[in-house]
Image (cartoon, rainbow, N blue to C red; front, side, top):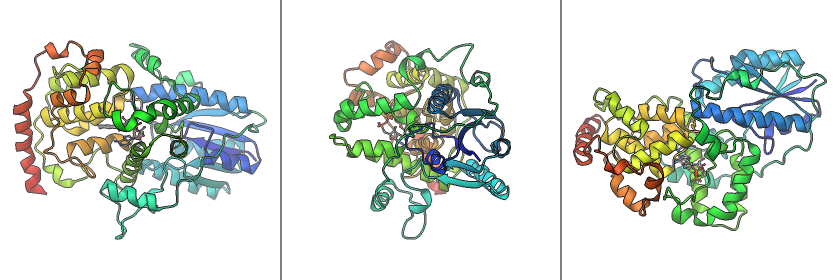
Length: 445
Ligand code: FAD
């Protein structure tokens, strides 16, 4: 009886424990990906993420075929689709790598129960995080709220396991189950086709991900600690969409980094922030909609000014670094971390627009839009989150530009004419207004 491997945020053949369990079973392997836009609470993918997913799935399907297996595409509520497919192929076992979001865990638990009731073997594996969230707790048994002790506690645990090799071949089923046509999912933009800049910048898929990891560790990592904050330097790994889609596992990245000749301490601690964000989401599934610090519920957001939100989204604020970042995002589906912090601070603290509006825009436009990292970092900037930047720390985007884009290369590339515009808000006056509004949070908390 075949093994069914359910791919989700792990679009890779190497270091895939669920796939490994299937090959170890020695029976034919059927792979499935379910586009689930209907299960309660599952957040629909944003536009840039859909673009990435299309290309990554196309490659995964190709590679599974080359190895001798098959990728079945189905659409609908996973809780119906997966057990139905398991029955259809007479699966003896179903394997997957764990997801950590609240609604996803509910879906997975229900499926596990149903399959087991059918007498099917089910097992789930750790593939997306270095440390399982329930294994990292304070002495009092609570989740960590501060990064440094969190990361120190992680580093006390056994080191991340070595990555598994890619299977050389896979046994496929005698006949391939029916599959949707990827094109029918309409994951790619048509009118207008806004993806030209994404195509130019990115090569989605496991092969490109592994190549980028090698390239980063071979060339750019040497400069990481010095230049990682400079948006024009190209010193960071650009692995975030690859980690988001699991084209690389954190275990692969970790071991490749540790085994390289480069000084990678700073880089490893960024992987630690990814762990921290995901552990926070695990313990606080409403991270994208609710303030982690509830005192922030008292923040007196003024009525939304849609013209300001639109100017921010389009990179037409008249603040050069903000405009450059927002245009890089729109054109390429990506923005450098330093600039993400600056544009987020500007939205929340100079325009006084609720962080959730910014989080939604990023969710729709980032190729690495991540259910944990995105809201976690928005709350971090807003001051409402875990180990957050204090609210009163308001980035001055002009000073940030002087410091991190000293020669103006980044701004010149993305928003050369922005400096000639009239800013939509006065930086000093809006900063004052934000600090005054924050008094309400202080009183509440
Ligand atoms: P590198 O510096 O090379 O870091 C290596 C890896 O570590 C990254 O690929 C990423 O997986 C992880 N990482 C780095 N910084 C962070 C961080 N601050 N928090 C969590 N993980 C981190 N990252 C996302 O992956 N998805 C998002 O949706 C996302 N939204 C963000 C929103 C805001 C407002 C801010 C300030 C940051 C956001 N980040 C997000 C974090 C960070 O900006 C990106 O991970 C980073 O810019 C990706 O570039 P890189 O892969 O070259 O990073």
